[in-house]
Length: 609
Image (tube, rainbow, N blue to C red; front, side, top):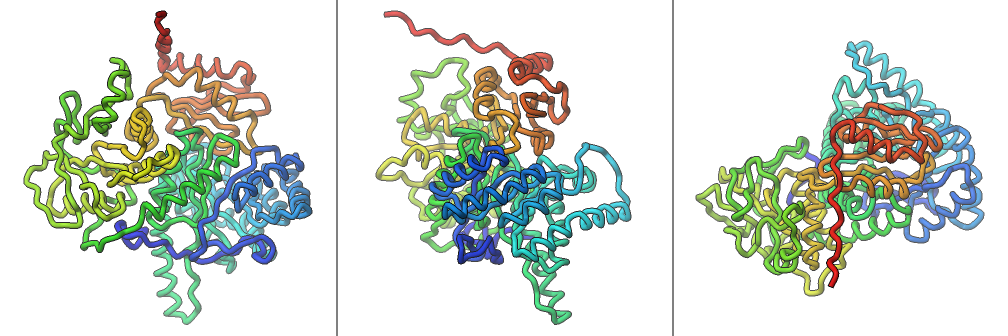
């Protein structure tokens, strides 16, 4: 299977075109060669028509092309009529997406009024109980018939009204049936979506797209790669069948919506999103995207715009490439095996060692005087002092020692991701497993990059390669600030799941389902817990993706009802209906009960003159 024509040469996936709304009245065609579409979501109550209209207009003003609104009940879905009417009265024709979970009746109401309805296969026709059950083939087939019975009315109505559907699986809400047959895996997410796609196709309905979202960028990348590969396989089968029967083939190359769900806020949210979304965009996948931040929605669009602008710059190839084999398994993450070597007098890399952070001499001179003995964020080697073999991977080279650290030579006329993939491929061909130092850039810009752009570029480049399993040490040079470049390197490693030097937060963006102010509560939880190195805390506004997305979190803070919070350990609810005013301290108590709490270091007081 393959998810793209080549891991070395950029070529955008040619998806089939679908229609969002009426292109003559504010709608558009998605897929094919059309530009990638930017999407965001309202954060207010869907029953508040005036605020929903206001937030939509604010999003459109900053370039949002597709606006998602939650419709948790039939009543909410019915109010979409008034929201749409007022938007159109004010001359705004942006297409709207109704976000549906659990309620097929709400989907049937919403599709009357909006251009797109998003359904989650994990909870549209199933209720999740984390139950373990073995299904016979007949029982499984019976479950599929039940799902088709529930989903078909929506498909037929979408076809009649010329609407679009988004089949959106979430890592955190796979059904028990899928979990028991395929496990909590990218394969399970893909098969869950394909079940619903087969139902659409049986009714000759093709105006739909897919999404495969996870809060873990590595899982998200694997899911989309596997989906793209499976769709190509199905395309080949369709062509063979059409040739045999004489029927016109119907392409399986449906558009893909990209997103890292519950990415969080600030730098962490941007880094996670850039790793997941940017990696796939650089491989030519993606027709629409959303950067999910625990911030005001218009700020998501700025990041979408900035991220999309980097892709041409990170994929342009100025030299012809030699033949090379695939350097990694794109569907199963495994770190490239390397021998352990001495990186510096204080650190080793390769083997089972942590991925190390290297800095330039200039950065070291700036940050070294400020480093304290217990600091986790610190340089582990100086670039100019490292015993390093710099290679032009477009040329043939010889290397006789497997314990030699290698990297790509500056100035090579290749995109950085391509250059390091090619280096790894050629080492594999030579039978060498040399440790690799990753760089975020192969030349320095004459004018320093804006910090927000340097962050996105470094995250896309280094994060993508780490997700491929390539890299034993990293060097960030595109960010010109010494302290900022050091911190960025560590944040990328944390977001990619390679190191843990601080508390990790999984925080969903706000929407109309949210039962508390996510931004305020997230800030409050961080203020109490951000010193807990290695602890992962999930902050969820409602239960839709909560237990599943929290499966690899240590603790969860979840909205259970208005002003009431449920606390979780992993995916298990432990405490229920805690008043919101007490919930943060009760979370701290729960962390203490499970022996994960340490007292924060006392703040260093400035000395008096």
